[in-house]
Length: 113
Image 1 (cartoon, helix red, strand yellow):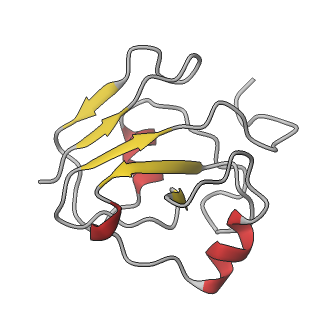
Image 2 (image 1 turned 180 degrees about the vertical axis):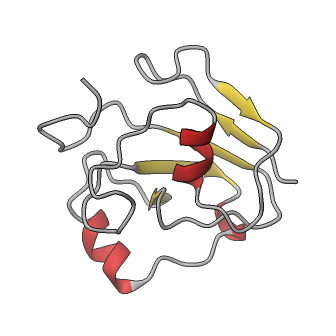
């Protein structure tokens, strides 16, 4: 099973996290949510917003390339970097990943209040 290391985020994951039981074929977003890291996902993981944007610091080569729809959505993300992905579309393969959750999103209303 691949491991996902989540770098510290002040609100969502202050201590960072190590997820040792990520399943190949699951999205990064779903794995984070399953491990109580409440990443935003305003479109319910349908690739219609950018609130689940993550930066893959290590292991991006193991992910399938973003399709055109994801690329178009990423253009709207806050803090876009070359290794940015929408976590709802980034499907885990066999390699370990290190992900960073951006400090901000363009979501004006959070899922959880």
